[in-house]
Image (cartoon, rainbow, N blue to C red; front, side, top):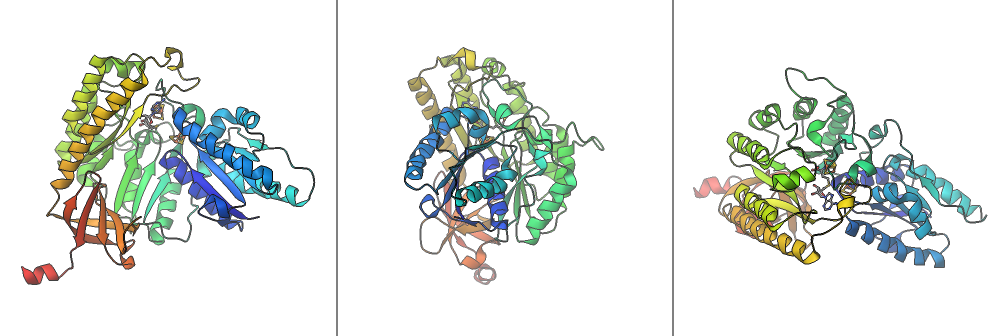
Length: 457
Ligand code: SAH
Ligand code: SF4
Ligand code: F3S
């Protein structure tokens, strides 16, 4: 009864949380499997950011509940943001659930599972659902250093939890609670351990990473705690690339921009959520910046690193978004020239300040606006990739590609996906690749064999 499958929905933070739960479970003698059919226990780590994300997980849970009715020993749990958001209601809807574990309680999953299994093995009546959703002081420090022995070439590291912003559309402050930073030395310790096991690239995670520790730690030499953390991570031997996600325009000051000029490990790639190009809509979203401010930060970044790759998040169809508002989003989106973007259709979230505004923009309008941005993105992304054809860049190899014999996947510093025929020995290594062909999403290339070029030159 100890084979566990964890299915993860939502953002990188959720992936990191799932990895941590998996590592804790392995440490207790559970084995982790990669599909639900081989599992005795299925845990869904869920997301609430849009209705669709919730519906997917509810659909899956409903399906798995049927299996449970045939196999009384099968265990089904829901954890993460939707558990936090809809806890008791979930149990009413899906009475077969065994575990409902909130975002501050991931570290308690192993003990809850142990007790559920012990009760089941005692052959007594089926235990009630375990619901554990309370807030926990210092819970940001529980998801840490769960470093497995398996190689993680690139690793996510949560540096904080929660969010204190009040974006009117967003449910994250409710599901993840208030902003809490982890201590710097603990983060550094975790990354050193990762580096010792072969990790070459880290992505620092937080809802607003540049706000890291703003209440807990002082500025030093006019440097924010986040910049101080970047400097510390930069010193770690073995870590060659540093990324972070997501920063917010508020608090994106010169001390952070300057890092791109002086910290060579900091990759020239930035995920920088814009949300809308209309000041009126930004205001209604309670995003406290103007589009000019947003663009001025990008301009400064590009002055420091002209080859910067920038990605973003945009929501189309926020209540009250007119054709004129969307035209502004389209214009700025095109002029800025994003290399990557996550485009979302507005979804009403319960108990947010935008909820009373309803959802007046029709599905068709949202679809159309989404499509317009997608086309701009596809064009720009293809142009940027095509411009790389014929050039050579260093690629960090992460693992086998999903398709193709001997094909391996890597990324450039600009976060472009690269597929190359290579040997498994390259996983975890950097190697120069010459790009030969490009699509909007992928570069295809060949390894440059050192020495060979020199001879032919
Ligand atoms: N903390 C991050 C975002 C986390 S949520 C930040 O502020 O940048 C990821 C993205 O989901 C958001 O940037 C937003 O674009 C989108 N999103 C959040 N709530 C949404 C909603 N109700 N409907 C549609 N998209 C939403
Ligand atoms: Fe949500 Fe805004 Fe916080 Fe991001 S900053 S998690 S969008 S409330
Ligand atoms: Fe979703 Fe929670 Fe992340 S709502 S986007 S999984 S923080």
